[in-house]
Image 1 (tube, rainbow, N blue to C red):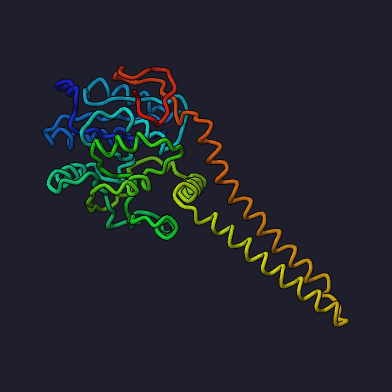
Image 2 (tube, rainbow, N blue to C red; image 1 turned 180 degrees about the vertical axis):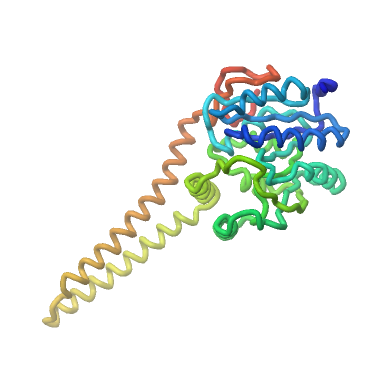
Length: 330
């Protein structure tokens, strides 16, 4: 049954990025709404439809009729998971903001525990940490572990390999994130770099309730590249050290050739020449590829193109149909 309209200034905002989630959407609403109603605080649920092509928009409109606390923000085109979350953060109004996916792998019931921990410990960020990931495939567990170990080493970040995008943040934290000018944000790394007081809440990660994962291997690789080039200069130093190594080896080869010539020796055969050329050509291409990634990020930042375009907002408070970047609105 319809309840009272949501408050103009909610205490809690729940941001949910969605892309083609028609199978799991009814289950998600069925579990999330009782949790928020029982918390007895004013709330809003901002579902960011990231250009879905299935029946997700239709099901959201049906849910909107019976749930006053629901707010739908629809993007004109698929802009990616992180951009969809950014769009939700940009339009959220709550003193506390939770980001959660719709697949029910992260249980909505944990939100109440997060809020209690945030208030009791007076922190700005509460990370959801998975204590049991047996429902994930072995490949996903190992690749996730390798990703976080790599980022801890390269970017010197104190991050848990069992914390993803399920977290609660204070309004100050959200405002700081929205104010950042960078594109292609990886929020699971951006938030720790702020250094705001934080704590953790542990939970068991469940299997996906319905539907299929919208994060294939190609997107995981893209996320890894964005993370490395966005938070570390180590690859550039890697290219520099390779260049220095190549210079030293070339100098030694030159000395050896001159010495052999002066002593009447003969140079090595074609095999050694081919090996040297192949190795250093490969290193040069690798270094050029690393430099290209950073140049590409710089080029994208200079273009200042919006990360997403908002086509529809059921709350009718934003500039509908206009382009919005991840920058704060004046």
